[in-house]
Length: 246
Image 1 (cartoon, one colour):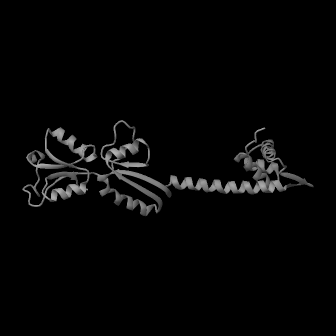
Image 2 (cartoon, helix red, strand yellow):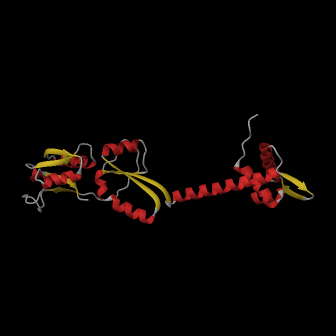
């Protein structure tokens, strides 16, 4: 015959009876009928295989098995209380783990925001994953993180999106370039060599869309997967670039 499992409700009834030494007072506390409380205590006794209470005159006292069961019930109650507190902390962002995946362009501004978050929530462990857009989208499809920061979220996924910061794109040029420090239209730079981010990156997608709307074609000589490398190449005179201001 399979062993009957003891439930939290049964232990709650048993602990109330042990506390009051009375089935009627336990039933009153729990807003249950006395037969219901008696049944739950009897079911525990059947699972244990020993009586939990005995009559000593008019008093109801715990047996040795009852004392052991009461200790177990109190220990489980402590564990459950700790569990509820942990869940409450997670809901209130008091402690726990927060996983954030971001595209490479976001690494220039997001750490400042994360730093402020960590100061306000010192017991929350934050994990940042920085990668190209394709890798972040793959993590998103696998639901590996809690939040994602990117320019163009995939359109085939049902996502809740929030604007975070304005990420203005600007043209950078080497010192001494004829256009440095001037306000120019992109069409005026049609004869210049350009260095772009790799196809698939969020910033590249944004630039390509903008150029398509303006019907402008630029001379892209190099594609690079790092904004730091792009800046160095521009400074060396290899060409101009369009990157985020942040």
